[in-house]
Image 1 (tube, rainbow, N blue to C red):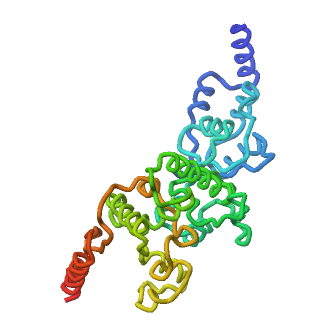
Image 2: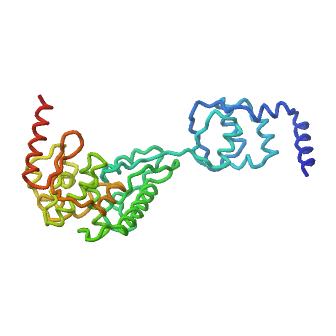
Image 3: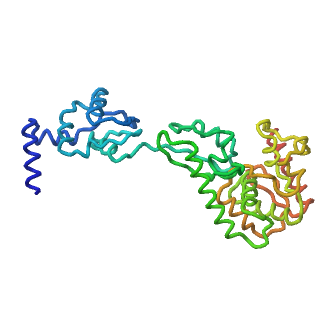
Length: 331
């Protein structure tokens, strides 16, 4: 059988006037594209049409030899539509990439602590991603329910192909978040003052927004757990800022702390009604397994970390230390 194939190939080469040496040159010829060139193969594009398009761009010298090779190897003509990143490998390597449907990959990242508003603004500018999101129907579109979408998208980098939809990316992010949250809820500490996995998501989002150093997530979780256990209000600025929404100018004022919103934890008891950001896995697991401590206060030290205190007296001193630090910085 092998002898028959070799004979057919040699006969074809003889008939077409292409010698063995020319065949080797054809097989090894590079595709002369600029580096990292993106090229769209439209639906219904045939092999000859593709070859002519590349020839018109001066990426290859002529099509005849490749048409002969395609006659000998019909799999070369199986072109899959899509956007491909061509490289400076051989012409045949790049055709094989299209045969195999290895489309160019792009990525979109949801950052830990981003709000839903920030995620939606970023994804609307994601390259080659079709924005099919309908703002009035987001929860149904992504979650398949009327739950508030805030908090439900797992921070990670998601890869996609050209013309994939924004909703498909967000659905993947939600599916992972649901899985992580389920795992955390199944492994929660006993006597946790959080009554549902959704309350864990809310708490985790607050921990995420309060965290300057990743290593402090557990202690911050401990502070908020102690406050809930002792019926203290959470009194956390990120919830106040979230309640202000798009009107927040970057400077939290005393009137902001005293003005009621459902998210102002200086005015409400317990947790706000929804998460305030997209929490990371460490923040979620900190929420369900906070370390035991007596800390009920913390304040920034000015270097990204916090000073944790057990009493109001200790806390007030830490606040004064921070204010002195800020005053010296502004001299």
